[in-house]
Length: 357
Image 1 (cartoon, rainbow, N blue to C red):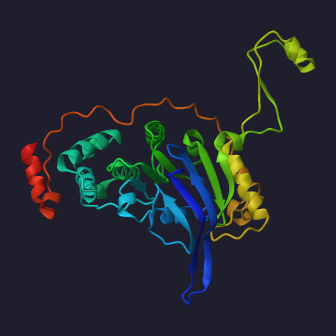
Image 2: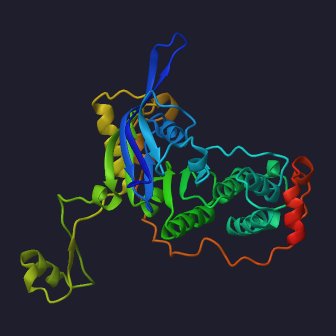
Image 3: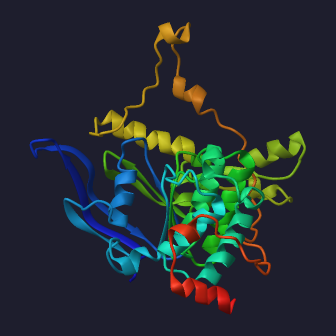
């Protein structure tokens, strides 16, 4: 129970039709995630991230090694009822509306009807879907489907929240809301595992990260420590004259103004690309796609240049978002008509709960 998540020599090998080892998706993974921290699990496509998450959730069995989640095994019903999971692709019933969807997942967790109604209304308000709560999910855009997917991951008030590409398909406002929500949940002593290809989002919210390549950890640690460049010194001060700048260059001690001396920070995006490029340069095996810095001239219509440099141009670092509450005060819920689920699923205790309510 020292860690929320701990893996010991975790390995997953996928075999071919004849039972011969074919793909080593995860290999000798030793990972520790503390309670109440936001942990980023990063890596290019095919690096083993999704396989690792499925091993933690008990959806896959390891070839060898073990994964300990919340003090037990992820496939234990007593453990997985304390886990919230948002997969990379939300699998939702197209003909149910958001309110019915959340009520359905609440039933799966065995929540009483009154609690289901209260949490459903609070979550719909939180993800901004209360105005469309009666529309079939099949009519939603991808971004709206991600919002309801996040809500269903929180319906059981989990101790461990696993988010796989939570901001995929969201507009900038929705992305900011998700990041604010992650910060708020972390302040409420939730443990969060975040997988995302949007490295700026990871840099904004994660306490620690691990970068996977070829099923192995290539770098791990606190974000600030990994991105700190100790080989250079950065001096920051207010507006000063050119003469003062020359004096500073000669001798910093003679400057009367306040001077801040610190090591500059490297962007997570450039650090990530450097780690992956180093692994590729050593010809490390991987079952995923191999990145290239060149593009065929017949596609570009011009001499091929450094594609990654153009794609990953540095942008202005976003200002830290102010922490805001993940939920608003819950209004007294009005009786919600159970249009479809009450016809599909009927339990006597539900009728008693409604009578008591």
